[in-house]
Image (cartoon, rainbow, N blue to C red; front, top):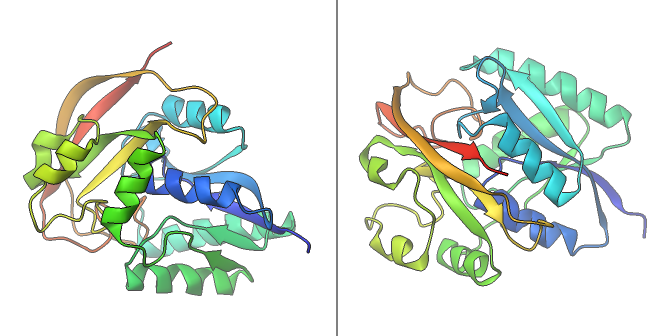
Length: 242
């Protein structure tokens, strides 16, 4: 059977990492690029706030070419859609037929993604879709992955900069999804079976940033993908180390 030529929508976090792990086990999937939206003004992963250098290090350790989509800090929906469509058309011209996401249970987000892909003549693949998030985080940790919380909703600010452990997961408030699927937090994955070597980092400054309501439906670009009623996010700057 001919393999499906895919792009992988790479946020740099734990769900992306676990989804990629499963995709790399599937001989029917040929992943040509890791596609990441990057804040063009700040040179950081959109929403997550992780430095571009750490993103590049991930791609190097994974061994899949990185494809950056450069965006302004808070793009409007039309600007975001138009930019993504331009890049999807370019990728479709290279023979790409499928786009892979690490989404778990947000129906509206999946519908949005599938509609935009269909307009470009592509289809979505969701390796983690509808799996229990407690099972997912346990699998992630059992596989030897390591990840650090790069940003959080305002109420969870004390977690920014902490590595995810079983103890931390058990300490989360009852209304917080353990994978942060409702936009509660975003992470940076620094080690695991998809990486040739761990990526060394140290934590730097913690900064609080206020945001207006999200303007688009991409969880890598807007502060939270379920439009939570928060006034801002806490970010922990992660600094690359040799």
